[in-house]
Length: 368
Image (cartoon, rainbow, N blue to C red; front, side, top):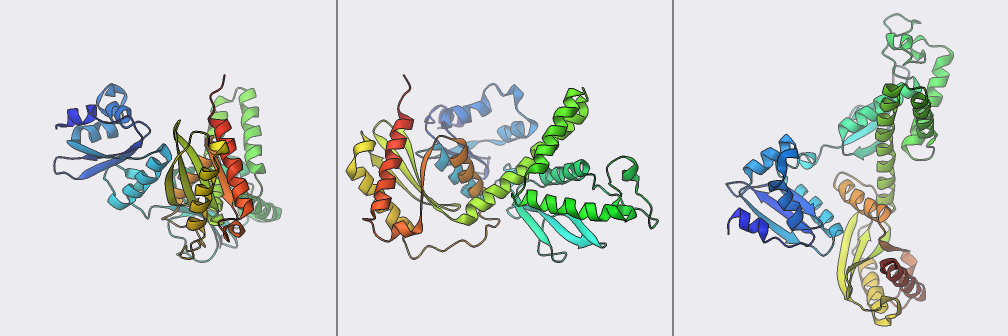
């Protein structure tokens, strides 16, 4: 079967596709809610493709695919395969060590905000991350410094102001005096923003953006809008990391068709188990509830599970997928405390699973 025939015969199901070159090397891995529609989009109506995609398509000679029951599983499988295979066209995942951190270290008598790829070098300090886009992090830090007027370019003469002070980008910390105290207070606010405990800097940026727009200063408003988006990226990544570090037991129920459910069991950033469940009336199906309770207890109650103490490079992408899935869709899920896992007959677990199934049935019911 040639490539055209393979594309035409692809199923409309979720899954992962692996593009190959003339030597049979896998050069790109992607995921799709509908494999046929997604892969066909590479070869048809391709005038709007980016140069990168056009180069990819010109090198495709073969493909294979792996089916999944849900789009979420396709996301997770794609992430794992990219890390294992490191295809040349998956640039974001080409270097599994290419993660970025924000550092706050003492330098020259005061704390400095910096960007680093290796938090173990350069001395002690506070570090936030890992983040998956260095360019976004650098632009976000730049935008924060400009907004907060702490973009000091340094002065060659003691007690003198730097060039950025005259441009309104530096509060004058370079000259010393009272500005140093204000500067340190601002650094404390940045730390609170990055660890998610105080988001008022973002609110101030949004207010300033709206003021600039009302004054018809559209270029300044657009710059603030872009900076705000980049700062939101930092804050959301912190939320993702916190979510993974909590290492909670999560049961997810998703509909495959009118007679089949999919149970997904997640712990922190790891997909531990998945099970197809036949059900016509899930809200009143005691057998279904008991089956889910048993799967939950056997999976999360296993003594072989290793507790996660810190999220690192290998977990950040999976955590992002799981976090986005739980927070941006209407998926039904249940967080299970460890104390519910002592016995498969725990009444609290059974009641919670029964409620989960009832809520999912209501969520999945067609609207009149």
